[in-house]
Length: 456
Image (tube, rainbow, N blue to C red; front, side, top):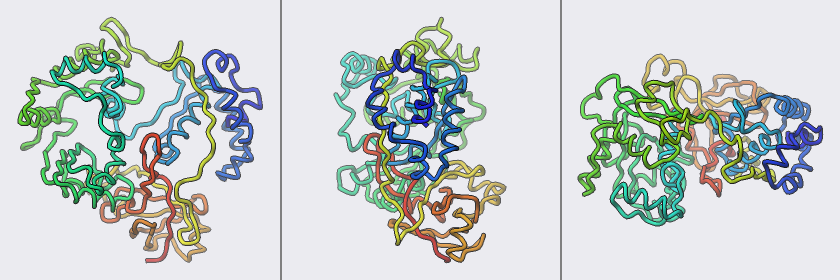
């Protein structure tokens, strides 16, 4: 797409000159990536690539939204950089309804990242190597923080399983994540979880991960808590408690505070509002957002530095955080595992409309369970005919890591590619997927591995 945009003069030369750097290195790679070259790799017709390029380049405004199908690869970072290149060469950034937006898998992924779910940063993307940032949090919390957030291999969840099996990591505290269903190569993950000296899981339901825990802490659900969440456009919105938590369930923050107190650190808050007041004092981009203002507005978008600020609908209007936007020359790389004679199909995975993520909250709902009662694998009519399979046949899908049973669904899908959801715990698709990692961000290659299919 970038090749066609530039060769047809559809790029924004002024924006490139004034707002970006690295164009020559970028073009040195893109120059050989013609639409015909891309067709040979992807199977997407060159004319369709050209059509898409022209639609995007001429759009006013132009917005790219991507999701896990782009990122859950060993080249996930490179794919996002390639998408960012398109926005930069067309100038579709720094103005309303434009830019590059990830479509998050859950409603508060952005908020979790803002609060420090990326352990290479302090909350608010403040840097560990900045003494002023570190000292601010040390003063607020009355503790001495380490200079680094831990040794690098332990930063990302996907790297922890090998560390457990090597004996370097002995305990885990997991909140609201069913890693025994959703991680790649879950045979390894489950073996690692069972090898831990101590596993705590804070959850709503008895998930496959919770079943392996030494202690399960009962959490409250979304309608049983107060607080905020922040979605993909950086809009902070209020979450208001509607009903009391059942039984011994507590909001996450109360559980954390109780554990902290019992471990010798008095973490005392009266309510979620006090916690939010603390974070807005410590995170400049949240500084002007208050519960009162959120009650009076349909959310506020950070950066919002003070209480007179209206919030920021879009970023990068004048400059990028790093100054100029960097154009990156991205060479095409294949998946870590490609089809061969033994495993001739490329498997990719995803979700179905009827179930949410690992399905711990939807699989037990009778109406939803009835709609998608068992796991299935989609394959093309040509591949089904070659294998002697009919729609509805019971099949065995196997990879180098495991095998599952599923129903064949003959559908309109590219030859050589098969697709499966990952919701069913009695036939967990992630027994098959590859735990090869993107070397930069640590994401596993959940969206590409080699499999074979045979009649069960």
